Length: 212
Ligand SMILES: O=P(O)(O)OC[C@H]1O[C@H](OP(=O)(O)OP(=O)(O)O)[C@H](O)[C@@H]1O
Ligand SMILES: O=c1cc[nH]c(=O)[nH]1
Ligand SMILES: [Mg+2]
Image (tube, rainbow, N blue to C red; front, top):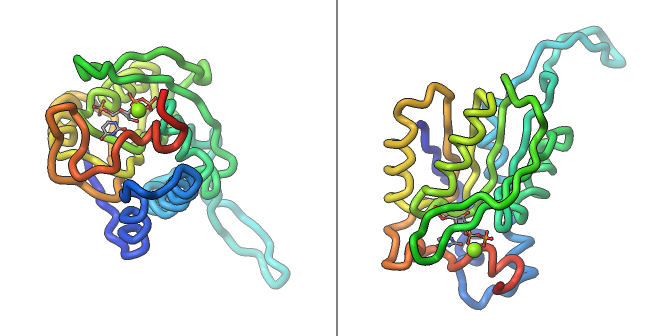
């Protein structure tokens, strides 16, 4: 597994405003989208392309275009939904599938409550979207699910990651053949006793969509 922390002053600035407890929900949603677009630029470095012949107004030349089928983008509901538009801005032709997952607040174990993905995922490249990699349980379960369905290249885009979650994913993915990359805006200090990232930004889903 590769971990890529995007080191850029604009990312750091937007993340700082996002973290602030006083940032309201509309601003939080807008900043999430903007951050994802910046992260997506890095996350799509290995997007599959193929050579294509074109003719400019001046001369024929060879360029590249995204291979078909287009990559699959999978936001993990709820909070990952806030990242979808930012990702689609860079990959407008991507197909979108959905995974609904929730972490049990007591056991911290992830559960899947919804799944809507294309039937055939074999040989597909996938971008998983979830702002928070905390214990890593949610992403580990999502990655396992996608690999079993045939996805053969995964990039998970997160806003924040905890060192504990990154270590867990590294361990759990040791025997997974599919290449997995985590692209994140920051790796924070630690998890607290409730499994929240410290300093973090609180509950991403609640800050995007309200407390349920
Ligand atoms: O790494 P983990 O310890 O598994 O925690 C991270 C998960 O927790 C949050 O979702 P939550 O369960 O709060 O659902 P929500 O998006 O509906 O708020 C977050 O969006 C991740 O999916
Ligand atoms: O800090 C955290 C941990 C899990 N989920 C969140 O939304 N925030
Ligand atoms: Mg939540």
